[in-house]
Image (cartoon, rainbow, N blue to C red; front, top):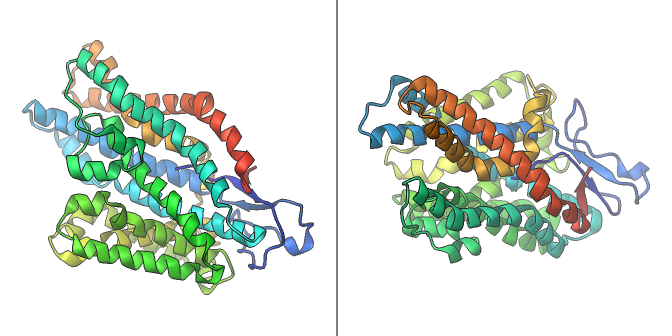
Length: 418
């Protein structure tokens, strides 16, 4: 869930026509008129704000779920406010779906550029970049989940034996562990399933694309997307498999990859997105909002076709938002305009991984202060405090811990942040 700012590419001149460069959209200088040694730049200025919105939706979903379950466990009536909040944000976990599509788009776009500029995909270098970005914080969270959390939970009377299996987490197979054993007691571990799927994607994707000529990239994406739909068809009545199994969700990444392919050169799709009329832009966002609010009614009906196509339909509109933000010249707004929100983009990976720690700390502070846990104003204040604490510890994690590894990451980069 790494943010994307300015990326530079080393290597020979590209033969792929450049994307349209206007109004802050992604730009690639014309390499035909520049020395080969000069860095070319690709700029995605609007994705950081989108990332923060996706994290915020996941945060609201988890905080509201935690609050509602606390009322229910105490056999108290859930206040009307939180019932309404649940209706609005019960699908906040779709932020994870958005992250998957975005990862597929970014990784594929950059791999295409690397292959076009250097003649090949440097798989080993790619792995080192991903290891240095993902592994340090992931394994820190695994340590907290299996070692620190049980001790803290015992001290505050929340102790319960952890049934999650450490080996599955150490090998990035924990999404399959969730399917087999259920959610871990430590919620810090419970959110890491999506990181495992992304790592599995990172492991296989550059290997696959390194052997495929550029002109066939779209066929690879379509083949994987079709295979994922077929897998979902065979497991349409198994909700956990549909949600946590890599083969059931890999279509999101493949869809993002397909969009990356179509926008990496002067295609008919790119020209359509670039000149997208405003009424179509409105339609994209309106349909995406409708899918977000009505997801359960539309796709949880028990109809097999609905369960099979859910991720494809939702992912398509998430993907259209990504390319609209990055390439459309007629946008009503660009997320880069929201500077404060966009500035949080570099912390999004930490925000996602650490937000339950923020919630736990806020709960502990409010309980130690004797706050009324069943007061709506107190709970709202608790939510704001949890968000601020999450932001604080994520910034500390980035600057004091993650950044040490990110400095090494550029040594293995053909595409680097500027």
